[in-house]
Length: 244
Ligand SMILES: NC(=O)c1ccc[n+]([C@@H]2O[C@H](COP(=O)([O-])OP(=O)(O)OC[C@H]3O[C@@H](n4cnc5c(N)ncnc54)[C@H](OP(=O)(O)O)[C@@H]3O)[C@@H](O)[C@H]2O)c1
Image (cartoon, rainbow, N blue to C red):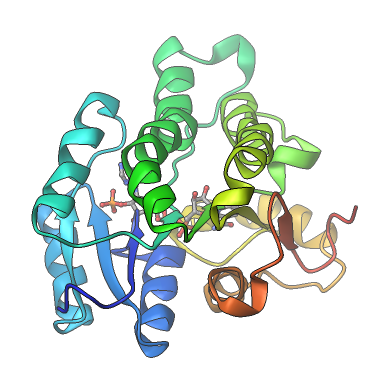
């Protein structure tokens, strides 16, 4: 790892969309610091990074630990030029049955953690007068879903957050954008039974789930110099299931 090379921090980089983003960024010559909640996850990250970065244990539910963890990266003299807030969870239940913990865990992991992470990296980015912040939202932020008041609230909360932050840092050379996936084939959607699967498919004009590569490509574009005049934007990648 080279301390002067462009570096991206990606949360949830041990599998799914985050891992795909990491692999594509490495191919573009960016080194990656990838997070996982477990040591096994960190090993997976270290294995595929092959020296183009390193893995870090980080549990976003522990919002109070985030600033300390990020400090470790700066103490090692790495900069964070690109932040990809990818990690996310769902804990589905109808509102009448939803436990307080199911609400709080999802809001903490998907929304509050983004505030703590960005607070930890924004001053050095401002000082450098360059940076890219890209966060993974969801089509559910826009259309809602039964059993997901917690998840949709967390993902739509990100929209106002990112528009406001984009305004605050636009003159500092930092862009702030969201990528909003539809239904993508990862472990996240593996839990759908065949009835749910058919129902979701019937709402996707392209008649297929998206691939994690298709989300990663959108992220790569927003992190590149080709997207230098795009900020406060949501890039929808959903096979036509939601259009604005
Ligand atoms: N797949 C879809 O259809 C879809 C659609 C719309 C939006 N999204 C969003 O896309 C993002 C990535 O999803 P995915 O499909 O790649 O899901 P995934 O395969 O389930 O991966 C989730 C990632 O989040 C990490 N994570 C979970 N809890 C965490 C915590 N408390 N602290 C830190 N990291 C945590 C996991 O790390 P560990 O394994 O180490 O816990 C894992 O790397 C999420 O934000 C999700 O909401 C996905």
